[in-house]
Image 1: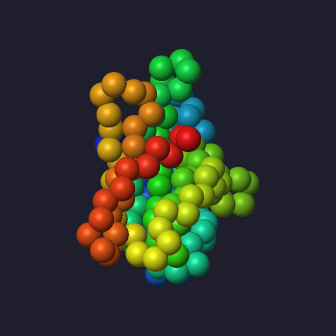
Image 2: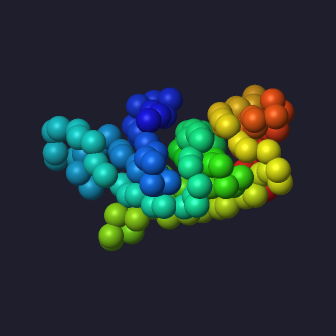
Image 3: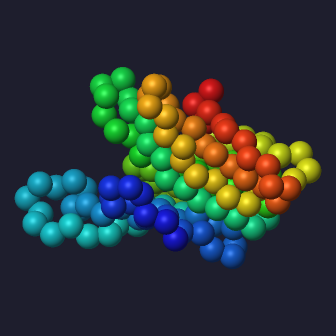
Length: 139
């Protein structure tokens, strides 16, 4: 399980290669509701082999608003990015992007690597051969 940096989202993975996402907010962002609760956003099975790491990140949109991002990597050597704000009506997370990140090594961890001079940020991955790579998930 992992919680994002401002505590609005948490995500977890299970042994069925699924990612689940929850959001801490008022129901349907209703301002009249006084209590904030954890709401289930969605769940999806994207990896075909075990998930080794999940990570939250953020970027800024064209209006300079913070946009939360969720990533996972797995033993299938792929990196997925998920839509963090909306699932579909059946509680399924949407995949925004899938990137093949390794050819032979197995990815073991990923972390958001924010940069100061650009708005996008990077993903730092490590593999079982003790190598690290920086990825720009936007391009």
